[in-house]
Length: 612
Image 1 (cartoon, helix red, strand yellow):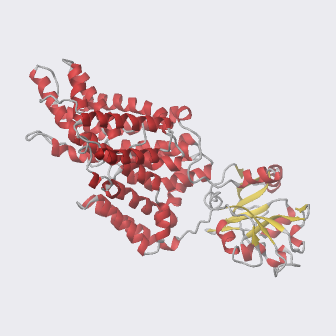
Image 2 (image 1 turned 90 degrees about the vertical axis):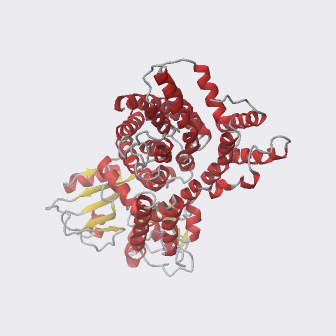
Image 3 (image 1 turned 45 degrees about the vertical axis):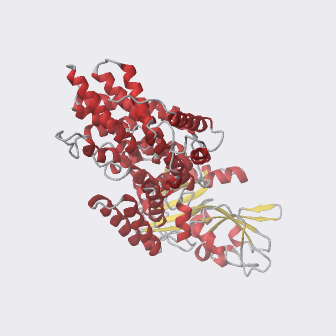
């Protein structure tokens, strides 16, 4: 093999690589800003004599139109469309029903599901689709997004090693093998991929409490009803769920009867297959009904004891409807011009008409909590209500109220559009799995279809895109190209392998895996694969010539799998994608990803030699 000489261009690229890593780790500036600065520096280098060929300035911004970046934009829009129609909420409900509400049970469910999906779908697509699911689960359980997103993202990357179509390097591998070498079949790598996904899940289940941060992401979750009561009013009101027995003494009573008899408020009912949030006072309670009750803890316990029914510690039937992102505490004021002045809550049928369950009336310095339903409303009264956020959004347009609460989730779901969303999602999947159409075009087909059918407006589609992720990835693409085109990557690989000298095959194999891991952090995983697979095959053949047991086919596969070992810094598409929503810093990836990187190397090398 011809020996490569370190050139001035290589030195400059090595310096830029080092600067990028320093900026990422120290976070002197945000990582997306750092990436943009490196891209601009690459462009300015063209003015320096002798360095004009480090990068093609005419193509410096091609990363913004790359297949990877356009795919990420499209899949974010598709995920937002599915979330808007309630599909992702249903997926979240199913996961919570099976996995419960604790981190240790939810993590394997979410991470395992994403891992399997990413075995036949691009891992960034699987991760992007599940970000809304994780957001819903976080809102309902109170678990921080940062405790859930990183395990999900890492397992999406690991899932790409389960089949030969799970990641771009594995898809490309057979084309890079020398003529006459047996190609790999679709499920040849499945034992290795399953072992890696299992390792990732066990790692976060056992060590997650030590390596995962507990931070708030870009889209902070709505405050829970209980937390709001405690923070603003110092009250210990809680919401609990109860199922009435067949012969319950409460059956046959109306909601109003129950609330007059007991110091609790019925905020939701589920009877005869119908769920109501804010049921009107005249609704008759049926046997076997599910009730969501709001009140002080002691009052709820006393109510349960007197009625002979058991309270559930967590919401089940009402977990979705009463999640903080769907309902909570709102405050409205009765203006002097309101037609409601002089009428009581009962006269107005506040819950039936407006969807507001009035919990208290603030008048002057007094808060009325007893008998408030019969109190005539006065101008200036502030009503504290439990309600669905869509009900609060509706009355913002009603001149009989002035809505004080402004920071609630203004979420308008479109369940009537679910058939359009699912149709275009399935069309996209079919195009990805059964055609050779470019990935970005297949995904954009689904995204555009959702916009044209009204699942999302174009403005909502723009808002669904994490532009921080887009600029981070697009700005790093020119640096990866420079590492490859200037021969810097080949020089690093050659120098590393020459330093090893005559070593045993397993050390050589491990070295190739480490090199692939390093290169995939600073350049595209496809570029790393194209560069290192021929090198790995050549060194294995040379080792065979010296009488060593080195299989070139296994060495090539080692490189293709190791290019998925991208956990240390957020340069991989999936890591860049989850960084904003999870509120992660680079050091969070270094801490959690450092251990995962080592585990990946150990498990993959052991499994490669066991299977092959």
